[in-house]
Length: 253
Image (tube, rainbow, N blue to C red; front, side, top):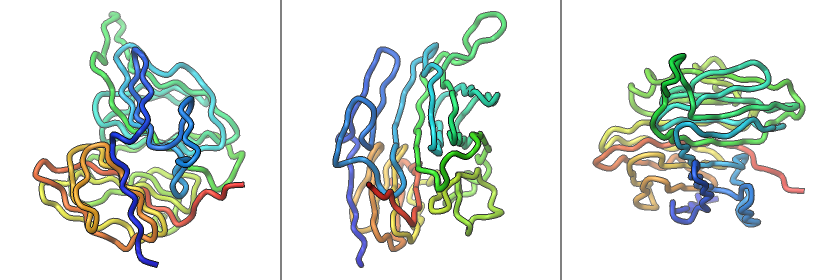
């Protein structure tokens, strides 16, 4: 079966806006349901969020979801009910396994003892959710700085549950049919996308050309079914791109 490429432009995403949040949603999410746009492969959520300083998401629950957060600019403070906390910054991969149930908060509100804000700028990040392959597991948390790998060019594996990536320096996810790759492409640098039943590309920064589909700019996505390792080439300003490689899809009941 030849590859099918569905281009989703940045402007086609739904926008949730509050005084402290701007959230562009690639899939049906929250109070803005889109019945025909619930997932691609195993990916259910891909939100591009900007959170103003001194604000953020208060403590809230999740269950049976693998949640990966990738910061583009600024820093995000994470705290959860399992006792994990940390500051997520560009190049630091973070995964939270919601499993049997977890409470967490995500804020742009770190302060020094003197009361001065550490984070005085908005934080800009992508948050992605995939279904786990096993329900009801113990909740968990993992983070890993991959800036060194990104600086070497080409793809870096950000998170994976695929057996073929066993032993690779990446954070793990509870989904044996999915892996997330990221690349910071230099101007005119070319890489190939995965050869997989489902590939989701998201242009986080810059612009690139996808073989057979033309130009993609910041915020654009490509949903590729039966992907055949097509080339992507960064434009003159370079590009930062996230790629989900998946060999299964959500089974709707």
